[in-house]
Length: 104
Image 1: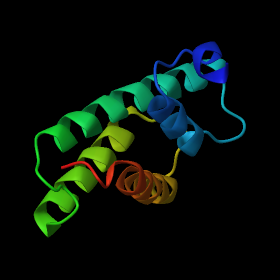
Image 2: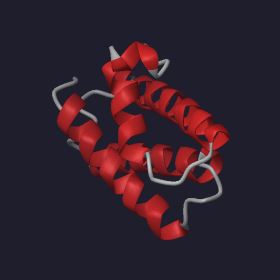
Image 3: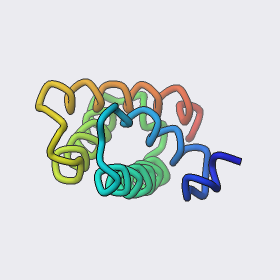
């Protein structure tokens, strides 16, 4: 199973990793990317668990986007440009909204 082979504990971690993965990363960058996916999902789930209907209010949506953006800016390998970080932030937010949108 790829999930275990890649070192993840959940489909969500693997999904975030897949969303962030790009060509030409070194082994150390891939390792860092895996760590980012795990950390980011933990932060997102923690935030979602503490908010009722997180996608219904502009302020809670904005807080989630800021969390995603901050982790990506601080943790992604250096090969990710500002434009790509903005793209990945939007992509991950949309994924989270689709996957966890029913969380109350």
